[in-house]
Length: 271
Image (cartoon, rainbow, N blue to C red; front, side, top):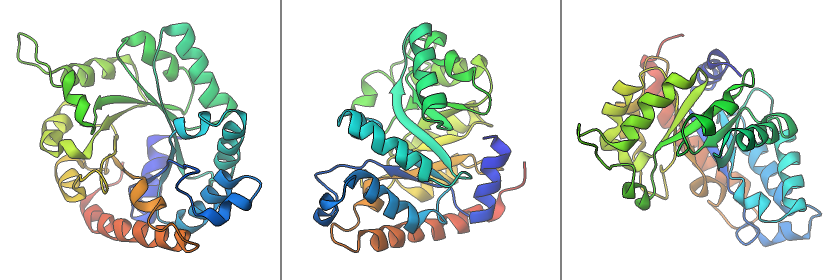
């Protein structure tokens, strides 16, 4: 998927919502456990209820691979069910030496046909470049994350007073095109500076909702002239209800976010 394709969906739906499919057998409504594939059935109903309101879905791979072969099968069925025009993100946080990263890229881009995968850049170009060898696919590189432990390393400064996450933003852009960055919504005070460093890249923004991030602040400081944001909500949407009305409740939460986003998109332009 190209940047233009993604922005076309953002304009069409007046939304930059990404829904995280962090599907946990212990949290889905109990009545679904009677189905042959509870994980897929849950995802299917969430997708049916929300696909017109979002532009991306982000399965967190840990929730699927922890279940072994059945989890991978549920993931594959889920991915095949998502409408083709919707951007798909494998939230796998892979990153290793070149040969291994190449196999990770092959897994998510060929075997499962995701549009993108989240990547840990700690091993430098070896861990990122193999994901850029696939036409129309994207590497979404961790820059400044929303978790509390992220400050252990990401905000460390060198002798020039530059933080590690800033170095990552600058260096990774030299690796090639089709790069996005993960920037946590709970770090909203950094968004203005981050947008200066990476003016043209899309940001995948977790942390809105349950983690306390502000959608308004993210949009104010992180949006560029063609939006440039994919704001993710996972638990706040998919677990809005634990009863049989879970899909209806997920739609309502998605609609609330989408309506806010529509107002924020009034000043964006066409690429």
